Length: 268
Image 1 (cartoon, rainbow, N blue to C red):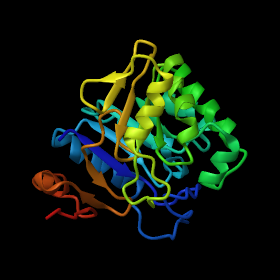
Image 2 (cartoon, rainbow, N blue to C red; image 1 turned 90 degrees about the horizontal axis):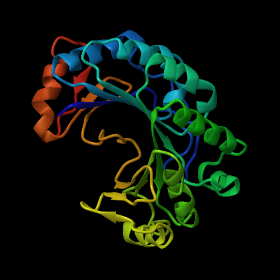
Image 3 (cartoon, one colour; image 1 turned 180 degrees about the vertical axis):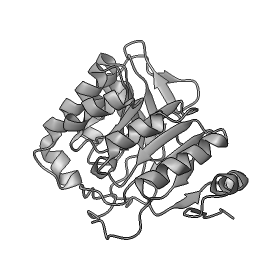
Image 4 (tube, rainbow, N blue to C red; image 1 turned 120 degrees about the vertical axis):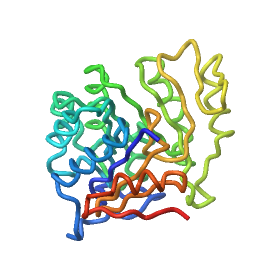
């Protein structure tokens, strides 16, 4: 186990139909800036070198750029990425690059403004998100785009996948486990759509698909976070609860040892 996911906030400024309504910050206890850094240092001491910042929407965290900078200063941190819906990314990307962020995973289901509004409840933000993606790629930051497979995104899969033919971007297609069956688009259906538009698309493991016409890869996964091989990880909530699979219980306990403000939720 060499990966650690930190949830900075619970609230999100989108209301995607398959996810949840916009959740305001209720003012409940949340780990402080200093406490997050203390947990990262404790995790590094246990040999964990790869970190991912998520939400909610992590760009709503008021000191994100500063936090990225401080985490990257910790000896032993080899990788730090964020998963974001891209809102305000255009404004924040230069600071994140300067702070040393290694990778960014942008959740964007469709490139069409009207359908985007139907999915997220937001309008007049898609162009800004696309600009943020281009700026991330131009800065040579490792970039991924994550698409939730649904009947709303099916008409645009080939368009988004085409971005991997222009830029070295990884495109991830994920299924949401508890999505209503009326909205679900299965992997086999999605793959059929993609293979009609991308010649020579093939995979050795059924998860990562490549083609000579692509500069990046196409991937199938089960969750929106977790790009850049970060899917198997310990997870710290914004309220200080550390979770892991049953095989990771001992590691959770070691990370928590001596840090009174976090606690484990051991998997049985």
